[in-house]
Amino acid sequence: MTLSIELGSSHVKVYDEDQGLILYEPSIVVAKNKNNKPVLIDFGKSAYEMSSQLREDEKLVQPIKNGVISDFHCAKLLLDRVLELLVGNKTRRKQLELILCIPSCATTAQANEYIKLLNSCGVSAITLKPQLCCICRLLDNDISKPYFIVDIGAGKTEIGITTIRKVIDAISLSLAGEMIDMSIHEVLQYRYNISISRAETEHLKENVASLYATDATTAKVRALNLTNSTWQDYIISSQDIYDSLIICYDKILEGINAFYNSLDKEYQDTIKKTGIFFSGLGCEIIGFEKYAQSKLNLDVYILDAPAIATVEGALN
Image (cartoon, rainbow, N blue to C red):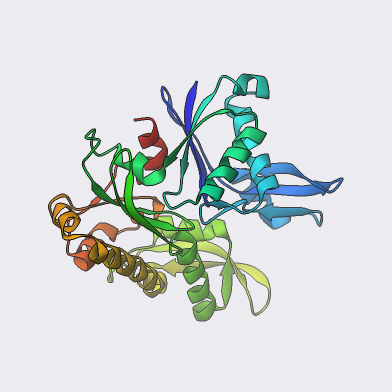
């Protein structure tokens, strides 16, 4: 059995060579301490749903942040549960061949931490592949042809020029989905003195977030009124969060421009012909493709199913 997996800041994604995508869950856990060790209560969407009703001894944990393991014990709880659901016990996991998509700018120490995590969950047949190389596999089978790829994830944005086999040059920006979430939170608090949950923030990004200045789409959210501490329904429009989105995306696009300008002329000439390829949830915002093209002055392409491009490409 061969699977590819990405342990992202926002989601765990698992792809099977025969069945395609078999798991896509938020990478969060609800855990509690028992005998000074964390014990898993739930993970993924279910953890989100119970996050507002936690007991005193329970906590919501995001074990992967900015593409790296921030809480090893809770990351193990999360991965153990995922493998239990998809593969079975540790005896069965010995037959598993796992391709792990890791950040392209990961250090050796960070890569070793991922291997340690997988080993602790009973997986020994491991192949590490940089995310940008995985995405590149969806574009071409030519092992030597370079492509300019940008992956806008939750904790980071990876920008690089890469072939299928090797990342030629890349940078990682701490500007991505979580920054956009924070910006939306701040603007709603400033305008309406309300606070919304992570789930409601995702709801807004999926339904009203737009880079078109004239978009007037609206959506209803449940929010905490910070004046009187009551939960109420509010109607939020694209215009309410437009400015916060533009600030975030302009910073990301400035980083892309800076990286492009730092490349040798040989690579710049190649990119002018082939364009820039985008993946990740961050490029699914309405109007992103046109807005990015206007700011970058290069052809912009968004991959099919950009949110799962890394795990799909890893097995391509």
